[in-house]
Length: 143
Length: 231
Image (cartoon, rainbow over all chains, first blue to last red; front, top):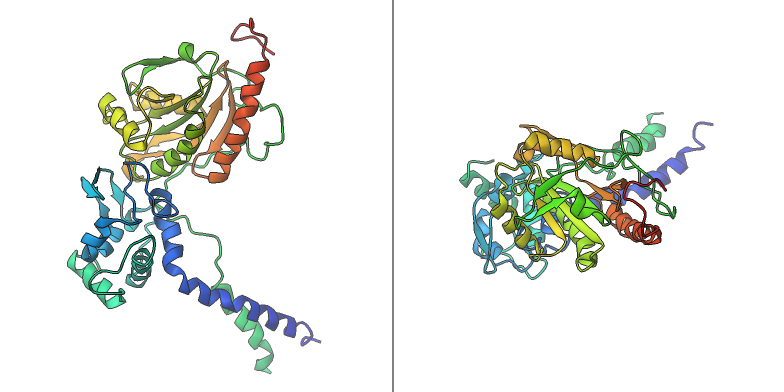
């Protein structure tokens, strides 16, 4: 008697399975939506001269080795992006209300997403690796 | 015997894989407010909102980013949308202002409509700071989006409550102030007629649907009616 509903459960389990993998695959894009898009825009367009764009951003191209630390620690003070000056405090993910800490793997996926979309390109080191992100984070006292 | 439980175990294990409720870790410190206007888009007349029943918002008079005075008198006969922000706010403000920007873009040339952003950090947000903020946001000088300087934080928090938004000093919050991203829609007689979560694009869309309803109501009012007349 107990066996009857089980094939149904098994089918359900199989149906649920793909979500496990697709989530991981699009992690960079998903993290962007969760942590970045509300200020930097759904398409990385930024907000006027208040929040700099991430799409086609020369800042990303010029500072590939600092991006992991910026994601973690945020940014303060004036910067120039594509010839426009910005001066708005950016929170690092660790300063958010839930004190959510992105892992080196998550930051790697996030930055790989950014550097392969909207006209951006990977830095001179190519596609990011977790080890590379860990090295960047160590350089700014993070781990 | 153990085998028959395997599918169940698998299902249990999978529960951890699902997307689940999205964690709110976007850096947003929001005081959630009851969005009573939600789901009311089908109504042709907007409700009268307010904690103390049907009362217009108290009189006020504040300088804007150009040094011009905005008051209940200068707003009489106009419909306006409010929110509360501060220029250095790294949490919810950029999102909230970019949402309001969508509404502004459709009504920036409309003399019947005004947008008011009250600063809740007046010590920092002086007139030049407000003017610079407006420019950076893409609000042209002299248009109908006014950034208002409040006397001090307590006064700003009181104003926020008049417009059914919440704001308070909170050292734990990004920028030191916790506040809601609530927008209020105020009619020509000073009554709050709608509140919207300014961080939610669906709520911005609702505001865009309800604003014309209110403009239609205002247009239909008898021209000679005194500002406080009950309809």
